[in-house]
Length: 103
Image (cartoon, rainbow, N blue to C red; front, side, top):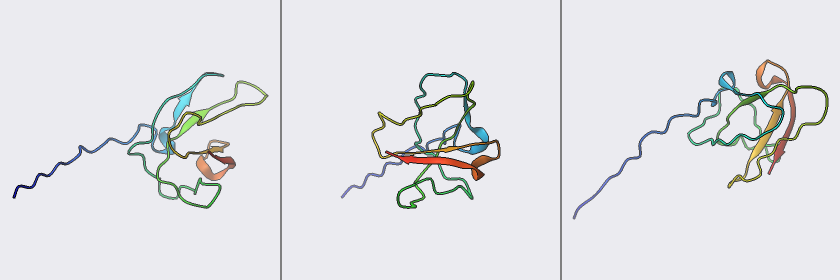
């Protein structure tokens, strides 16, 4: 009898895994492609799942400042898994939630 064991190499967390390291989006329009493989939840991070209070498995963070008054649209269309998009306002982290959408 022969047994084989394989181990996967540890994956690095995304650069924007923590709120303090949010990736800055500088354009008024465009798209960002990224993933949350190996991402984590930070200590004290809120439950972003707006439907059933499930904490979710991971989060990645982005920071964007509107160039002026008007409407902004953010979407996770094209993702191949169930996603949650939570939007927060201000500079103090997740203490000031504006909305949470689940797709």
